[in-house]
Image 1 (tube, rainbow, N blue to C red):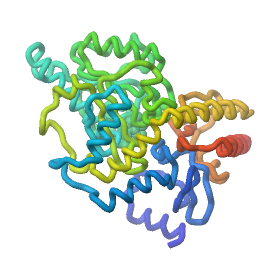
Image 2: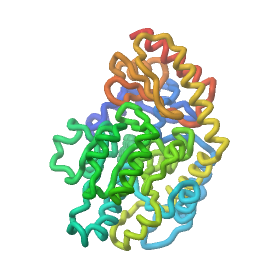
Image 3: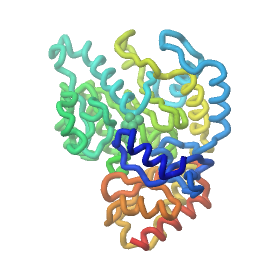
Image 4: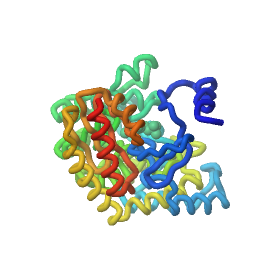
Length: 399
Ligand SMILES: Cc1ncc(COP(=O)(O)O)c(C=O)c1O
C-alpha cells in the first residue's frame, strides 16, 4: 500500500477523532522517524512524551524479546515476577511504599481518585456522613485525561460540555494561586490533583511555593495530594520524578506515558497510609501490570533513573534552552519549561508552525493555541538539538 492508499483506508474505516498529518510513519531509529516515502523527521514529539529512549533501544528490545518468549499475559489473580520487580523498583526510586498498575494516564488518575475516595470514606463516615468528604480539587489549565472522571478534573469546557454530566464532586482553583487553592480546599476535599509541570495546558511549571502550600493545605484538611506526573515524570524534567526537583512529596503520584517504553502502562505510586485504606476488590483491571509490559518497564525505569542519564537530560535541557534563546524571531514571546519539556509561546498559532515544520523534517506539537511544545526523546544528541533549532528558526522566518 502506498501513502495515499493508507490514508484513504484510515479515512474510510477509522473513527475520525484525530486530526492527523498527511504522511504515514513507518519506522524509526534513535530520535528519527521515517515515513513511507522515505522522508526523515527529527522527532520532538516522541509519542507526546512517551518514547523517552527514542526508537530501537536495544535494551528495551531485549527485555521485550526475552519476556515475549515466556509469558505475555496472565490474570491479576496470579503473581508474576516482572510486576513484583517493577513495583519494587518504583518504590525504591520514589517516596512510595506501594504501587497499583493501570493501562494509561487517564486510568491511573481515575484509580487515584477512587483510592482517595476510599481513604476518605472510612474517615468521614463517622464525622460528616458517607459522602461528606468526596470533593476532588483540581486546577485551571490542568489536563488529567479524557475518561469521565479524569475529564471532570480537566478544566476545558470545550472537551467537557458535549459529554456532561461528568463525574460530580470536582472543584477548580487557579493554578499557581495559593489564595484560590485555600478557598477551594476545605474539610470536604478528599484529594487535590496537580501537575508539577502542566503539559497540555501550555507548559507551565508550578512554583515551589505553590506545591509546598498545597502540601500544607492537604495536611490541614486531611486531604491526599496527588501529583499527576503522567507527562512530566520519569526523567522528563531532569530528575526521575518532577516532585524531586521541588522537594515536596505527594501522597500519590500517577505515571504513564514513558513507563513501558511505548507500550501502554500506567501506575499509581502511594504511601503506606493510603495503601492501608484499600482492600481486595476495591479496584482492579484485566490488563494492568501484565508481565510483558512490566518487563519492558523495569528496563526503562532502570535506565532513566541512572543519575548519569538524568544529568545528561539536565545538560541537554540547558543547551536546548540556550540555543532557542539565540533564535532571532519576533514570533517568540517566551520559552519556558523544565528539562526536556519545553514550551515556546508564540504570537502566531502553534498549529501553523507544526505544519510548516513537517516540510522541514521536524515533528513538534502544540500545547494550547499559541504554545509550541518540544518533548524529544531524552536521548536526543547535541548535534540533533542543533538541527532542531536550525530548522525551527527557518520555519519561524517563513511565517
Ligand atoms: C498530565 C497528563 N495526565 C494524564 C494524561 C492522560 O494520559 P492518557 O492519554 O495515557 O490517558 C495526559 C495525556 O496527555 C497528561 O499529559
